[in-house]
Image (tube, rainbow, N blue to C red; front, side, top):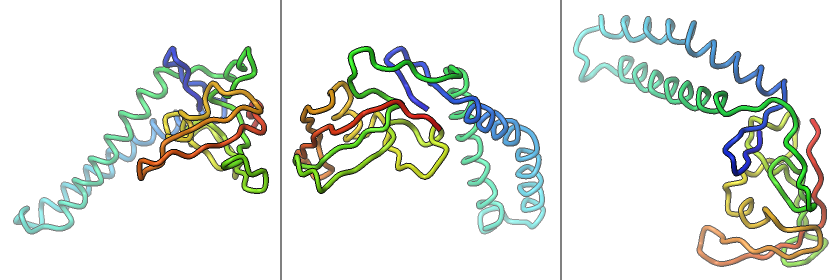
Length: 166
């Protein structure tokens, strides 16, 4: 999955189908299952000390959050491949190879997208992550900088950037 500034989410057909199937399961059979668990736990008595009831309610909350996430994601989905950057700059949907501090022996190759987009064993970084926001817009050969969790800055050199193909 990739996101562009127009807030369109690009998904492969495979990723779209997978997410749609997950949404259908969560809004159908999964809701029925969790409702049955809650009802069964309610029948056990005092809800304040009923671990099964609280666990089922927590599971229900997580399920409903995922339903909202999937609904929003699929509403903004565009099936197909994200358009390539016209100027060759790093953009969501690209496989990027970087060198840390310009050291070409210390490299990382990753997909700049959300995890739902990747269909393989490639490491994935979100375009909204510190590294993702640091490299977006830079071209091969350029240096980019991003902020580490401890507040320090790290620099990387863009070695390669090409469109992702599953």
